[in-house]
Image 1 (cartoon, rainbow, N blue to C red):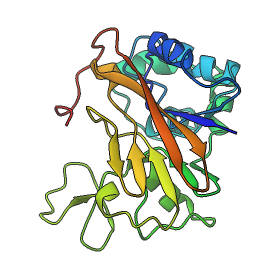
Image 2 (image 1 turned 90 degrees about the horizontal axis):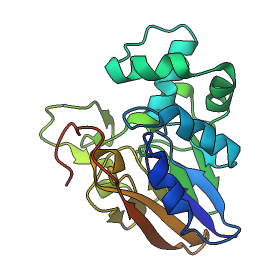
Image 3 (image 1 turned 30 degrees about the vertical axis):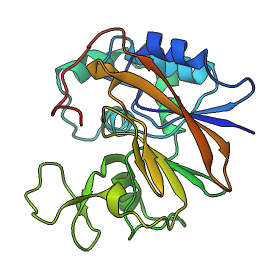
Length: 228
């Protein structure tokens, strides 16, 4: 069985349809999440994933809309205020079905990342939600929030020791897939005018993979910082 894992789509449905034309026949398809928000067709892309039985990991954008649906106090930005009213009961049922991670032999798929302190044997919810937001860790491998001023901050993937296997993740956009010894980041900022990327996993025990990509048709949103 081959597995195809897609990076953050963020409403770039046309690019997603184009990328799917490249995948191996019969492959099992997985999204790292963040299908919603920012791009031109966020709700349509979410429904496209469900219709095409693309197994989807919870992203922080899906989780934000879900928490709003649950009645939690959530601040939606202008774009999210456009998206949220379009979501129907069936959409929230699909989002509620999304797990925080998926493990397949030595392969682990999460939305954002994992620290060397987090083990995925039934972790509590507060640790699970870190999998949606993680970027940097401190010298003790503890989660650091965005825009922290810690001089010892390190990107989690650069210090990840492989204890949960080979990790495929999205969330943080890069110009090119970020390849480390024990993980690969495949959010290549399609919504920011770069590329939509997928990784094709050919062996989930002795990890073997290849990368497929399509160019964004245009720039739909501005990144918080230039892609590196």
